[in-house]
Amino acid sequence: VAGKNIKLSLNIELQQYAESLMMNKKGAVVAIEPSTGEILCLVSAPSYDPSLLVGRERGGNYNKMMADPDKPLFNRAIQATYPPGSTFKPTQGLILLEEGIITTGTMFPCAHGFISGGLRVGCHGHGSPLPLKPALQTSCNAYFCWGFKAMIDKRGKYGSSANAFDIWKKHMVSMGYGYKLGVDLPGEYRGFIPNVDFYNKWYGAGHWSANTIISVSIGQGEILATPLQIANLCATIANRGHYITPHVVKEIQDTVVPAEYLEKHVPTIASHWYNDIAEGMRMAVTGGTCRLANLTDIEVCGKTGTAQNPHGRDHSAFMGFAPYHDPKIAIAVYVENAGFGATFGVPIGSLVMERYLRGYIPPERKYLEERMLQSNTIQFAGTKKH
Image 1: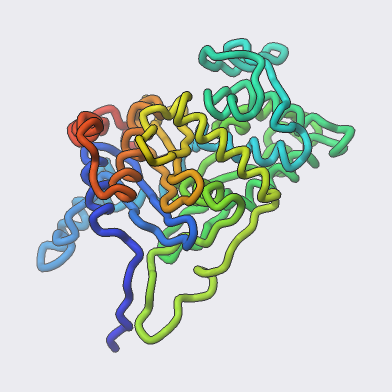
Image 2: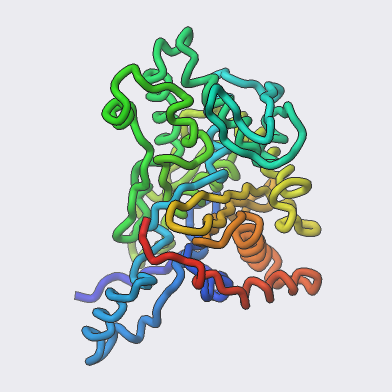
């Protein structure tokens, strides 16, 4: 029986462009239209030629691809679970504001990192102490470690670290982490946000505190997310406090799109806090870690991520949206083993946004486009799946 014709939300030119930028790289690009949840491009790299799976040779070709250590059949956009790194920091800011642990003026010190007892989490040089928005701008690790510690160890408010962490986790889940988002494609993975039982099993009930699990505050440790989840968070910030389940089916002939792809999901965070996070992300582009995303006459907001990787070189990540006040596109870029977020994540993300909003890349940014088209990071990639 013939199925009904469907129309996809994918922008074919943007899809091709993003794929070209991800040539010779491992990772993913996911772009979403924030107002509708429609996926504009969904790139998994390395990819494969679909014609190899048609005709007499398809069985042999399929077996070859299954055996390929670079896993071309593995859809990294919705199946790869990565440490989100610093792209996770906006969620921390939102939770700390919502819980009244900080205000936008609360300052924490950074002595080239977070130092508490014998524990140290490193950070790069910048002003100290600093409040929330400059902490997002400079991607300060110490700020979010101190904020997380202030919440998880606040026994006067929560009774125990376990109770505080339980509330933290509920906020995270409401923002689309830890469970499948429900994209209309098969094989989506859920990522991982640990719960109290997980830590009780590892350390024993009552034997862990913020310092024990401090790395989760900066998107490391046990935290895992898919590029789709990171893009969805960015769309939520772009919308100032809601998201629509990401989907690729735009229209179905003679019928309506299922209701779950039209309804708004509102996290447990008051919408006004999102304005402060968006402003911090704007500052990251105008004078922080995302300067390469600063476009003339398009106001971009962004957040870099450099995710530590136990199997080799760090991963380069970026999430961003534009324009600042009337967002048309939210994007997540994740390039495996490519180093700092600013090295590959930011250029690729900003080029895809610019191409979508402008329709072309202006002459003064052609050098960046050329560098991304020609660079090869797959040579540094391990083949171990996260």
